Image 1: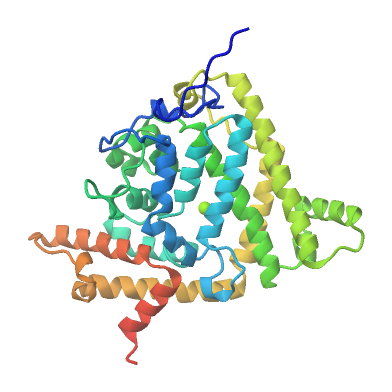
Image 2: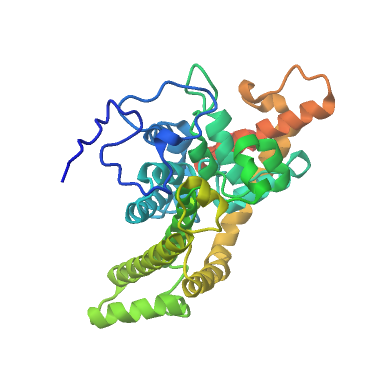
Length: 395
Ligand code: MG
């Protein structure tokens, strides 16, 4: 029997010692690279460098004060986009290790996936999209890519964070064909109907596992949902019964937490089993085979149906709860009023966001609208509330 010395991490750029990745995982040393060429990182892999750049970005810090479902100032214990993103990264990383995928890449994608979100959650995104209808629309997913490709201003040599193709591809979960044609390399797969890396597929489903479950937890904590009502969802009721059987007399926070953790676990186990079976069947030799196959990271049919019921329940009972609707209506007004005012009077914008030097009226208006959208999308909830007050209140 012979033993081979593991490669030294400092001498083999991008290759960690004993890299535990499967052949079909994304490999940092075989990345499609960055838009602006850079020297290989010495002491970390290309995907670690991406993750580090994301954590150090301005947009990442803003996630702390952006709504997931509940507006940031409604309570200290509710999820924000930041804690949501950390939960997504945690779920995605543990699944990645299990499937021998690249943990650093799933972590980078997970931490960056919501960077383009507007203030006030989906209410803000829908309002801004409506405002931008004549100017190409607004979509948070595309905006996340725009943040890392263009809007962050940290480096001397380029705009954005200059991330690897694999991280950017993972951030762009979905996109219309019109947008795909304008996006170049990361848009190509939507035109060719191909899949992204398994790491990107995994981060996407980890997002779903995270928000379905933490929204139940937040919904119950806020009192907008009740345990009896939640038990209309069979998936929840089954796990609650199991908890009550194991811990007779359990109630309150402990009962909720024990139930939700069992649900997360059931979803993850199902995802791992189903995905491992699909990977075994498709037998991809490398990431190119993954791109050409059907989606390989997936829930079983039964679990996908349970998750769909849960999602529907949350839509009907939490996201459209009258108290959430009231907040949504206020958020909508704030976004629309700011957009209309800024676009009508660009001289009210901070100078960096004002467009000058374009003679053609239509082109200037187009560019100005995008600048206004970037400005509003970058706001945290509380910044948007304050900025709205500064614009419309004399105090
Ligand atoms: Mg998300």
